[in-house]
Amino acid sequence: MVGRIGYTGGVADMTDPAGRLTAIEEAVRGLLSACGLDLTHKDLVGTPVRVARTWTEEFLSGFVMDPAKILGDPVVGEGTAELVVVRDLPFHGLCPHHLLPYTGRASVAYLPGDKLAGFGRLADLVTCFTRRLTLQERACNDVADALIEHLGARGAGCAMRGRHTCLCVPDNKHEAAVLTCSLRGELRTRADLQALLLA
Image (cartoon, rainbow, N blue to C red; front, side, top):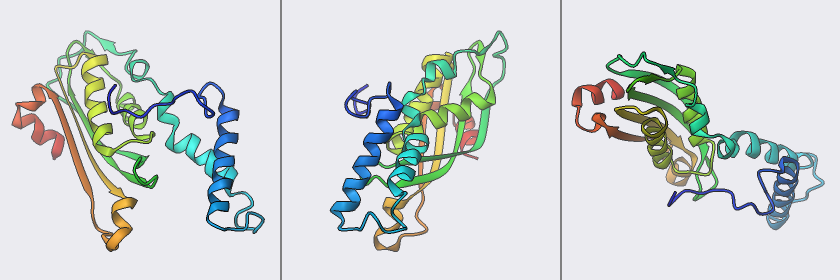
């Protein structure tokens, strides 16, 4: 997948969670030291452990999630719905450019082929692609692409509205929000279905 960030199997190998945590802890200690901070200060003593745990559980866990498995147990033979939409799915991710978090809500829609996915699976798909070092735009594309590829949907769409720390901190643009939308298959040409996704 061109443009995707993935694990290289280096020090922070996904097959060794304990080693990964230790490597992140050491990196955070190095960062704090490079900032000239006293690592023995009471506010910083537990920081490397907390940051490593947060990164592993909240910002990198999507790398070990497999969209094919998430959508791998569909309901077959029930795909007669015109459109399935699940709204207000919370997400958070980490900007790969600044390593700052973003949060938001997603709406996911698909036109079933002959298979239906559980509503919770759509939420899991959003989690899979946002809990990575990734752009909101890319996560949006990945959700829509996965519904076509792994569910056999006739059309798919994902809309995400997010607030990005990397946009809000500089110049005090605190009210700025980013809306991204990806459309695949029949949703690309059907304005009526696009309106349902974006409502």
